[in-house]
Length: 54
Length: 132
Image 1: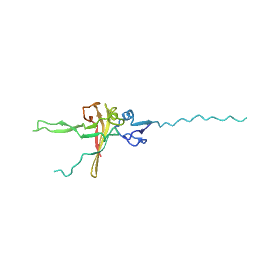
Image 2: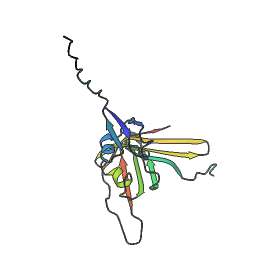
Image 3: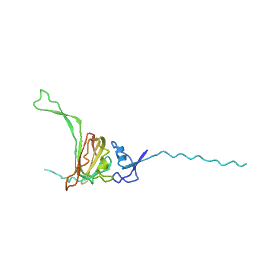
Image 4: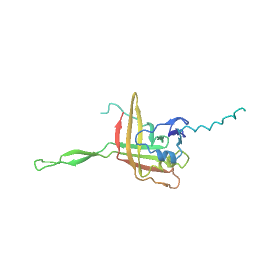
């Protein structure tokens, strides 16, 4: 999980937010100053095999 | 006699990583170490030694309920620990005062009177003060 800046009051919008020690992350999320971005890779869709030629 | 003078303009102020320098009208950072009385009968006056640090930061901010401003920044911080960073510049010298892990106990949510701009006074207590 990483955090993305959502307000110019915190930094450049769109940049990754790396919290310093003691920062209340939940308060920043509640206020909409940053947003969570999942780093989980999307699952691959199942590949469909072509029908074998007869 | 003072050899240098300093105009108390903050160049940066963040509370919980959010810049509030454009709302701040006054700030006091206090480095405080509690005095422990170590006076004995052999002394002729009180003597003290340093105990725990109990640093404090007080500030006055204009109240604003707009997005990303005073109220929205601080409402979720009340009752929890946070970090306050104040940067001052005097000529070629820059000092960054960081109070890490300080506690915000309360925040006035309405403080208004007829014909004046609303302000809120905040006190952050405790935490570790570092200067760089």
